[in-house]
Image 1 (cartoon, rainbow, N blue to C red):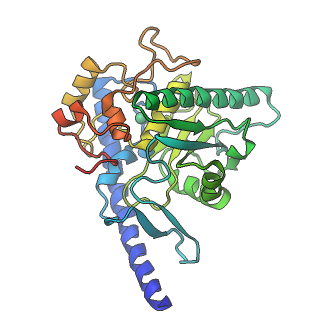
Image 2: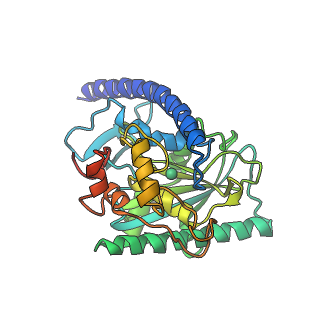
Image 3: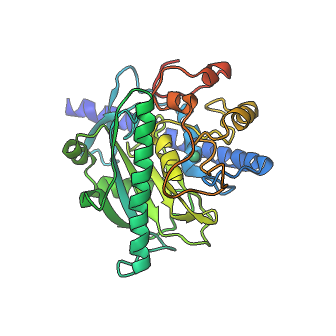
Length: 345
Ligand SMILES: [Zn+2]
């Protein structure tokens, strides 16, 4: 029996190894593609630039992997190459965040990398951390009201000043602002240091989203993005890489909410994405008819700037459908879109 299990894990390991290889190639292609499109469209929503790379482009990956999670909602997955006894059950169709209907815990990790660090003795850095906490609260309140609009109930627990066990520090000896190859060190840090199942139990949570926050400055060229779930992902952890300062400004609550919506399954609506069948026609439609949609822009349309005390952008039915809040979107049907992880097509 033990021998048989070993063989099964070996086969799963080989399949996931080749899935990683094929994903990597495809995501590089997607990155190039997105860069060209962004250049062409001159799109600027504050949450993306030409540097927008692997982590968010990964949203395209998940339709391409060959892993088949089968008909079961739960998959028995081995994360460790040495086939030790550390196995996890998780919802194989969603990763650590499913739909915002329910309780969501945000775990914030203040991370140092080769270029940027947090100084615990710096008043400025500590003020920035407090701002992050405040923006998370504003984003959470906003998402709770969005969910209520669909007749459902969301409870976000994000406040790491009230709940210090939701705050972590990490240090990486590589550049984490180069978005290539950040997922594995980030996942491994979480796997080694944070007991997600214990957090879910303690807070009676349905979802956990990890915010890895970097103390970047104006020299940073990486852009905030989310490692959202894709089929065959080796760890369940969905991570927002929050570069506090990117794209010439400090990210505000709308960006935080936008990134959390990625974790729940929403795609960007400002850039083409083959997997979701979002093409230039869809983007033109969104630009014309849904110009304040939060997956299209995080900028306040009146001031053309970020707001920091509230979110003025909207979650339209299209995004609500992608995150499982409604079972229907006319735009989705009209354009024959794809990739909703909450409803079978
Ligand atoms: Zn995005």
